[in-house]
Length: 423
Image 1: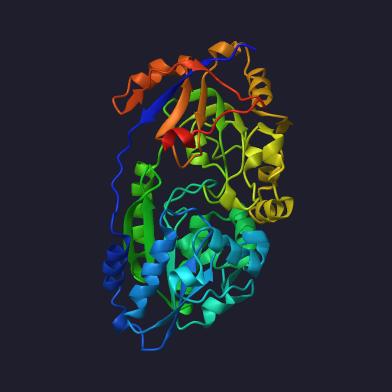
Image 2 (image 1 turned 90 degrees about the horizontal axis):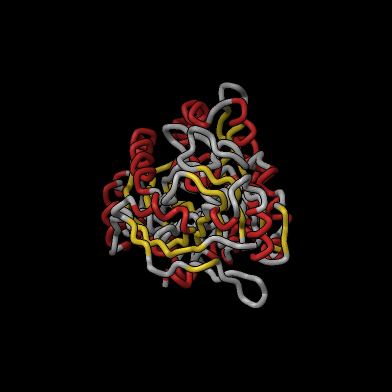
């Protein structure tokens, strides 16, 4: 098969960045005036999730240090719903893979899948909350604010989601995802968030927003009474900073790796354009990809391949990395079993690319619009086929390298990773 010529494209995004993480965290924690809310020796649970948040180990360590200055006794509690295989040990392993260990953050990690029911929604849905966090004198919610990959609202993924679904553990996450089918997440938030904030001793939140280069752009302490208003504002900022593909449509998107550390859905559907339907763009999506091919899983996802079912094609080496138990538990809990379905699997990249290009309609493969990305967090360096270049070159924030050449494969029929170009 004659394949399209590809060129390297460098994208420049608006990318403010925090250089001194520790100083910023300390300054923000001071804004919460913890001395007015706590007593010396009080216990304080700090949440840590499973997302691949830039500098998260440093952020958690600085948070531990900052709250100790107020006289409290902090500990870390995993807040990641059903991730880590839905076990307490698995969730500790997830944190370790993200650089959050007792030695590094200098605080104990207390992990349990047990929950308590703190209230019910008006429709009778029980609201679960991590038992260990509920037994602490205070709770501090730490999470990244960003657009969710499955639903739309004034509040999507951030402090509220961590507080309700993350700390809800496996039981709570499962019930919430079921409830979202009948009642929107904003409805649930309006119904129970205020009660959880009051009953569970939440003293504040530490909201993180990243730039388009997967770097920490903003860290802000938020008081409990400002959670709803401020998170909605931060979501708009996060959406503005979200990286994007350089074309509105493509025939084939090749993704080097997906994983839970990259996005809740493995690949960020806000980027690939399948937020509402797994295999098709809608008018509400920003981009349309006719076919998606996934080459591998990230190391830090530990076999959780949630979201692989959004793609149509993959390779045997990728499938060999899949942990079906972890993937199945996560996708069942999220009421998205389709996300665990294995795409058409080919022996290597060459055969997967050629198979995908046989399914794009009347366009000849050599004329196909093909984009290769490292993952949906890193879009500053990509590869694009020749037919995409006119559209890409019309924007001043992009530079096309003079290296047009066919898609190349090694002796095993596999492509090179884009991360090698980003170094």
